Image 1: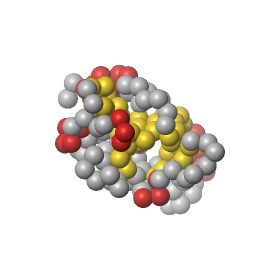
Image 2: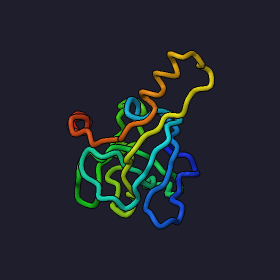
Image 3: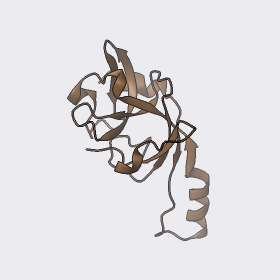
Image 4: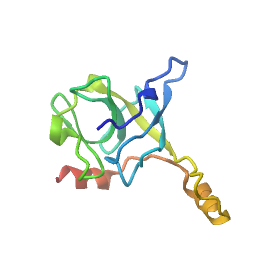
Length: 144
């Protein structure tokens, strides 16, 4: 059920950024198991953003979800993978104080199993990208 590795806690630094590693399938196809994320802690969250938050019932667990809708008392968050679960459909609205930050960038580490020149080229072209707000996805998710 946890979405981020335990190393995802923010390191005390002058800049409000940290690195997290995704575990689990709830954000597929946007994020995959093993992806590394650049998290902007304390950033303003808007509908459609991919965010990092503390799990409402197990606050030592960090999860990554999409902020689908602003509601009284916090955010309604959903995973991009409807079959994985573990979002507001299970635990309700997430209070603002549990929302830690916004995901800005995704980096996919290179698989050591594939070493062909073509796989290297594909990895170079697809391994890093910004994680943008996807309003069409949030509308689709809100309809669930």
